[in-house]
Amino acid sequence: MEARGIHHVGVAVADLDEAVRTYERLFGGRLEHRARVEDQGVEAASMRVGESRIELVAALDADTPVGRFIADRGPGMHHLAYEVEDVASALADLAEQGAELIDGAPRQGLFGLEVAFVHPESVHGVLSEVVSRG
Amino acid sequence: MEARGIHHVGVAVADLDEAVRTYERLFGGRLEHRARVEDQGVEAASMRVGESRIELVAALDADTPVGRFIADRGPGMHHLAYEVEDVASALADLAEQGAELIDGAPRQGLFGLEVAFVHPESVHGVLSEVVSRG
Image (cartoon, rainbow over all chains, first blue to last red; front, side, top):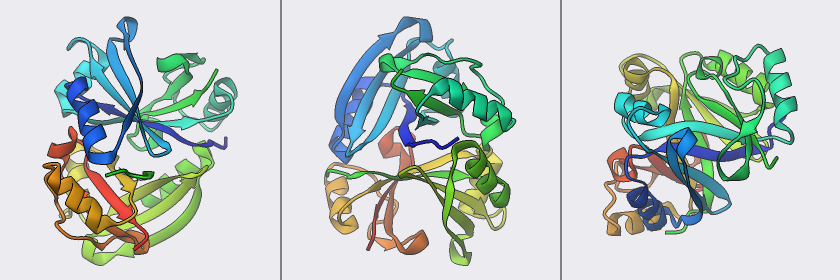
């Protein structure tokens, strides 16, 4: 599979408002989207920095995947997402290469994207995501 | 300061050869540069994935910053580097915004780049780097 490049870097934060301001202030980030997604237990903000994108993700409560990540490791880099042409065919290629998939089929991600996650054990500790515009 | 975008995502790995092969195999990565830098205690490989760049960094021994990172947290995402026009003026802007700098002045980084690091405490837990072609 040939990924097109990094779609975004996902960063787990404790305080979303403050994190948005930090990325605006330090790196000239611009808020692109912001959404609260109850069933994923997150509130997220997509920031553009130049042509690149940082996805800031805060937990809606402690007993969520992002809440547990922050409790275990503190805020910080959480996942790395690659843009692909088609998530389903990327998943087929990844499975053929022996990667352990968290999502066996594409699902609806944040901001209307079609996404799927690959287990960090298959990518040297990096929780990896493939993304397309769906 | 207006960063131009993400220059690379730095990933700490235990086995550099195996990690290069993983990024080639799973995401179509292409090896751009590889170097052993004794005084930084690392061997690093710059991989292109589409237009983006992943910097894989392995420790030359356990008693180095990357070696200690891996011992503490395991392999995984290590730092996030932004491309800027000029590292010295980016550092002046970051200091003015109250960011705690690890490098008060630009220094020589991997692969001939001019670099400086910002303390993760100032960026919600993300070790952040500013990079220019020097």
